[in-house]
Length: 97
Length: 320
Image 1 (tube, rainbow over the protein chains, first blue to last red):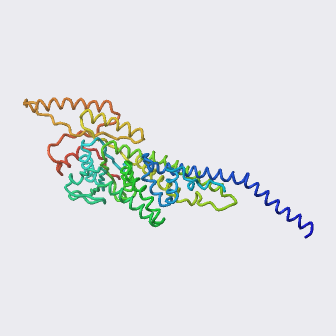
Image 2 (cartoon, each protein chain N blue to C red):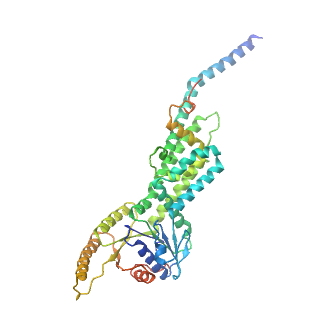
Image 3 (spheres, rainbow over the protein chains, first blue to last red):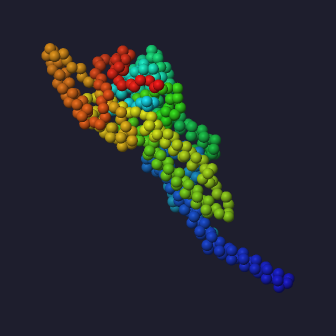
């Protein structure tokens, strides 16, 4: 193996490590925050649509019930999350191993 | 000429009689007329001695007059079934069972009834009214009606905010997905936003039609409670940009002949004097004109009485 090849391999490894570091420290947390905010506003949207699921009378739930066929799966997760905030699994996948 | 005429007022003041008579009058004037009852305690059938259902039916004995009675409970049920059916097509049975409770709940909220009625009202104004020159609505007692008529504005705003929220969250998802995976849905193709926009458009149509192509009459009786409630109703309607075209004072006590002087006559005379005061109060303090005064009828409302009442009501000549 020539010294050039060793250098090239080293550079490659270094690039990967640096990119990983950049992604881990800067990129990923930023995306995650945006994603979290997206989820929060989605929660707010759900709440505005289906406040009556929590006993708050909502004049629009008759109309928003029409949206349920499209939202069914998300709705179920949302409702579970709202009732039981402790559940780790429903924590929007916001954990790092 | 406005195509839609609404009659409102407190319960028991005789809205059904007045609106039925107005329908008869309008039909006699040559307008193809549809009489729609939205009062859950339907009495249009009783007035004409003929049963009406959910679709416009020709009234026997009256040319150019059709009637229908809207049943809000049936509307709510149909809405419920519609969603369930769509749900079954879109998602798995397990999810359906979970969500079903929510759907059921949404249809049992106090507002559901009004929402269903409102939906149907829009449908009547938009589609079923096409073959008619004039549509007369006999609406439920004041409170409900007023809420009903103020719904478009209120719901329009609400839908706006929902769309905004949804848009916001979709935008964020899109931002978070840069360079990586595709976002799940985007605002252009999102069926939720499309659905909400469609709703909004319907409410806007209702609001526009109520403001531009409808007249409102309030029916009241010459007694204090009725007058007070009517005053509130006029203000409420005005605050929603809906102008009341006139008041119909119904059930005025007939004056006894001057030579009579029995207990009954004295009672009637006293009562008449009080009612005169009330009517005068209405005429001087309301900004809305009294367009008709209708004497009380003893006995049941029959076709003859209806014709008689009809002649006392204002109807402009048929559209040219």
